[in-house]
Image: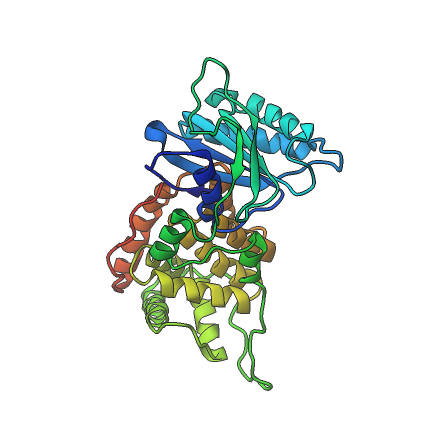
Length: 363
């Protein structure tokens, strides 16, 4: 899920073309729900796999997803719900699409049901789209739709939303969600043919004595230094120290504040590198820190992939489980700022200066 706001006039072709940019990747075989609030602002964009049988019959898992998403939409105060189905397995006029939209309409009743539903085979320049579900007769359409109820997409990669997102975040539009997953594929811990460094202790550390405080201060300062240094080039000795740092809970908690500062990009690169090169709890901690960075920045799709990696490495990793439940339940990114206050306090107690926040609260 990702949060976004768009104050321009909504029309069907422009909005459908912008969906990949809102998600961060080009979805396939998916159902996408856009929560539109007052002033016709898109308050949230949610995507899920379109789980249907070979004949287009919705699977039970999809019904459960609709129930969960319906609750999220109600909490977001959606005034209208726009739904898009993208699926290359069926023709645009196949009745299976309307069956799916009818089920969605029922589960989204607390938010007024599906305002209008679209179908397309792919998100690509020139791809055809069609209206498969229209608003009730006494309810005005929340979006401008051609009389024919159909049209074609512009290029999702060069639409205004994609360009604005690239300028503000530096991220290109990914061709699929699997590209996000590929960024976190494990790599060798050490590239040296012979390595004499022992692995760091792979367990959370949480000391409270004066000696512990001094060590925590050193480890947090190491993280800040490595984040400021730019793209990480880590030898095994430094990698071990950083693993110890992110497994030391007071240090990890303080380092989460980097996600809202000018050092955000450097932190992202470091957390991703540590996620790729560490295993078990080290990988879980690094991936969770990466997920937190994406989540608080409103990048729900990236956060979800990072949390999948964290929980696969250690299903019991508590912060990963907390963030995963929050993301799945539609908790807005701005609620994570309460954790940021705690992070700055933890850094201050250790005597390490974290730059002031510069990230605008999202969602």
